[in-house]
Amino acid sequence: MRNPVMLLMACLLVGCVAGPPYANTRTQDAATLVGTDKSEGAGMPVLIDTIDGATAQNPPFYLTPGSHHLSLHIENPRMNEEGLSGGRADEQQMEMDVFVAANGSYRLTGFVADSGSFYVVQLIDVASGSVCSQSRSRIVASGYKPPPE
Image (tube, rainbow, N blue to C red; front, side, top):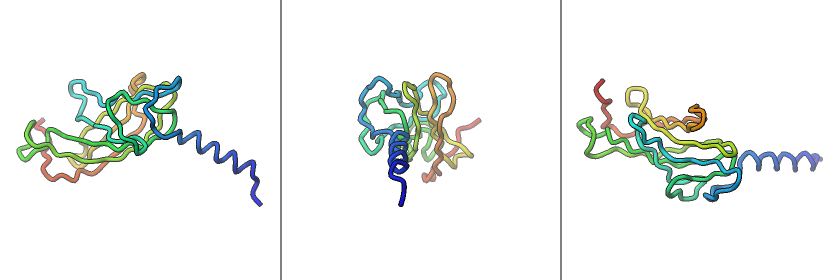
């Protein structure tokens, strides 16, 4: 027979780590996800479609501390048949699991890596500038040409 106290403790600990689902409610300990870094040379836009399965609308997004699942939409305006800015952009969906701390402030940044083979999205801690988590996805679009050096 299993120890019911240990089983209860295990369930409580799992619940604390995962955190409640996303509700975009600003609470006393909520972490803030401000969206994509839009500064010059910051990379490509990464849009958040859903957080924990719930539709994400206008940033900032308020998250309870713990783990969350993001569904992302990546659009690379440099990707078209001619390899130039403008024109038709290639788009791709991507999934990412993140962990946020209480009262933390985060942003997403995206870029192309490995000679145009992968999209990389990073969750950045705004206060320290450090990468908290990263996700890679093979580019499925065939028209990418890296920008000239």
